[in-house]
Length: 126
Image (cartoon, rainbow, N blue to C red; front, side, top):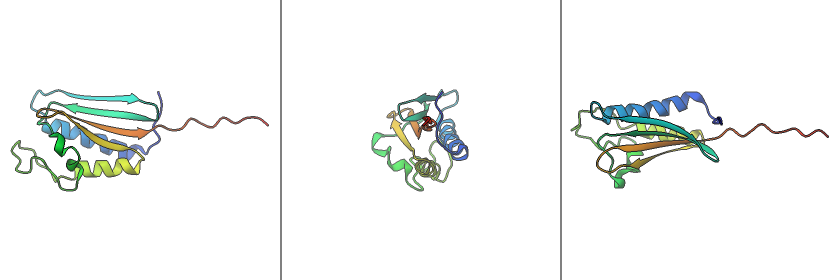
């Protein structure tokens, strides 16, 4: 399995935020899926839920500081609106990215892409 070129602390923090949001915004008994896939130049972590959903027009705005789509807490979920902002900032510091692939009215998927660790250089005898 390929390795990512990253600091494990921030990676844990990002994934904890994405999984925590999936749990908070999913109904009781709702399904949450977490996966990982090696790609050509990066590794993609995917967190999908059956929660309240994110309108496509809001998929970028939710990463802004203090933005909450459920600001009135209609769904009973508290928070500051900083989790996704921090996740995106950390991912950028690691050379990666976080984005939302909205599912419309129900459910959403978040992906974290982090660069692969380059293979060790092969030393050629001279």
